[in-house]
Image (cartoon, rainbow, N blue to C red; front, side):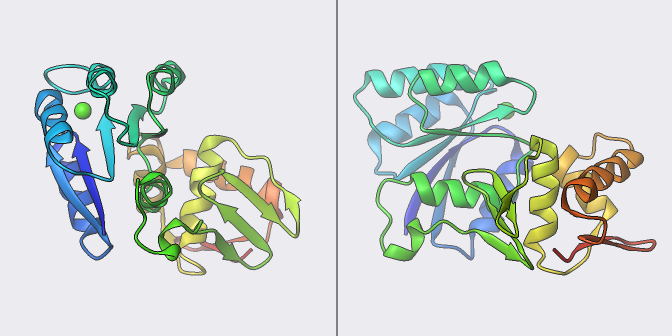
Length: 220
Ligand code: CA
């Protein structure tokens, strides 16, 4: 069992993560403010913290700094805005172990939690969960995709879309799902078509099938 302290003020995100992790070996305890999160991290025994930067009472960076100043070496994954590379650098400089850019995929967060958590209880939990479909293999941790042994250079968005498609292992991803998962629902519909075209350029036109009126399917 991995004990996760989730410091995040967005109710929806806390709920969906708690729900999503229910069937895994990761137990979630959540705090809504930086102050509460810091207190819990110092008083209780956790294997990892997932820390939002934008908290109502103080920045996640402040929580991180105080945590380290109190001598805690609890592994910390920070949640940053996708657009802010500066946040990522600041976080890592201040003692974060890893970061996730919002919006992120659930599978990737779980993979990072397993990788960074203090004490994986058995050998399997430290394993890197690569996703294989056809000739393609995607590694969520190193953010690399290889097909037929060749490295495919992808932008972060292209990678996220490829990961979403590959996770389904041949099942259809609907357009609405893709727009929600990769763009947080904040993009125009045709952005997806553009990115599918980019991926086909990288992977070959038949790597991704269009399911008319529904969405897309990765066949590798
Ligand atoms: Ca927040």
